[in-house]
Length: 71
Image (cartoon, rainbow, N blue to C red):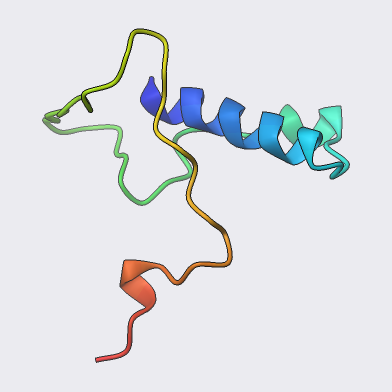
C-alpha cells in the first residue's frame, strides 16, 4: 500500500511542478513494477515515526542513488 501512496505523491508533485501527466500514462502505473516488491514472500514493514496522514519527503531525483555509488 505504501508504494501506491508514494506513487500518488510523486504524480502530485510532478503536476505541481508543471510536468504533463497524461491519464493514459496514469492508467499504466503499477506498484508491482518495483524491484523491492514481489508477488510472493514475507514482508516486514517498519513504519516511520510520522504524524497521522503524513508521508516522508520524496527523494530529490537529481541526487545520486545509494545503488549508483561507485565502488
